[in-house]
Length: 346
Image (cartoon, rainbow, N blue to C red; front, side, top):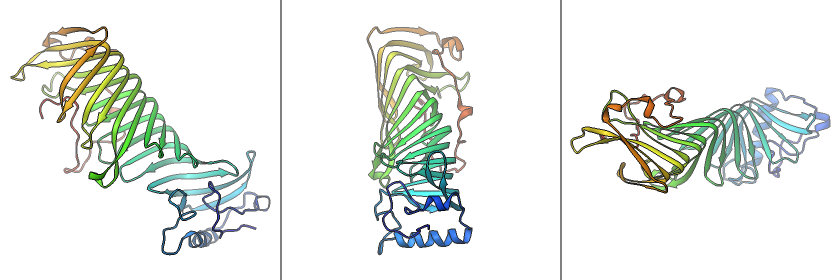
């Protein structure tokens, strides 16, 4: 027998708990029975006057839609699966994929095919994923890409992880991102979120960390041709970001290097400065660099302005990868296009 209506569900199972798997053995419900069963299940789980939740708590998972439900047993053990256009809700989060599978006694849901997780402020995609229900962590693999919905940042990598409890989003294994006109990259890109009262309690990024071969590049906008890039690199880069999505502080540590184009008070190019040290720290005000300090074995070189656009002076591992951005510039005329970090024509 399959019991579809039951108030008490286990912490992982988002369908139903009491299934005789031996008798079911991979039997598929017909669409009519599935629709009726899901309707009854939702009615049973809906608290009086409340939203459809598991245990009537936001911490539980709601199965909002699936084309088909399957149960059975394989080499791992008894399982439950939702198949086709799967959509699940957990608090403010929406998760979708083609198929989910969970096994008895495991605090995880395996998600396959076009996996996504989103809320009102960000969205992340991957080919496959695993959601750990006890830790509220989603691990993603295969063509991972994510973005802030206000277009302030987009990132892609081969693997990723979203930690809801810690308000962190990790991209790792050849991670590269685009913040307005700027490009960031590293072995790991870690984003930490705050909830902004100014934006209706939506998540905004308050810190961005780049770990391992960390690189920050920003096109110099004062002169369009030849193209020149202001650059920073090190073992780690930490950027503090205000609620307006502007960087307020930036620290480079571990074999820190920088390359900046210099101008006089009349915006005439005067040269290109290279600096290196153990640590480079920058403070920004109103989107403009206010101070820069290099400490620990500090060295510097200044190239003539005629070297602008010369690849030979670029920092090691510089590569402009704008063509890899999975999101094209916004088409709406009123959509925000965020400025580069070192824009001088603001």
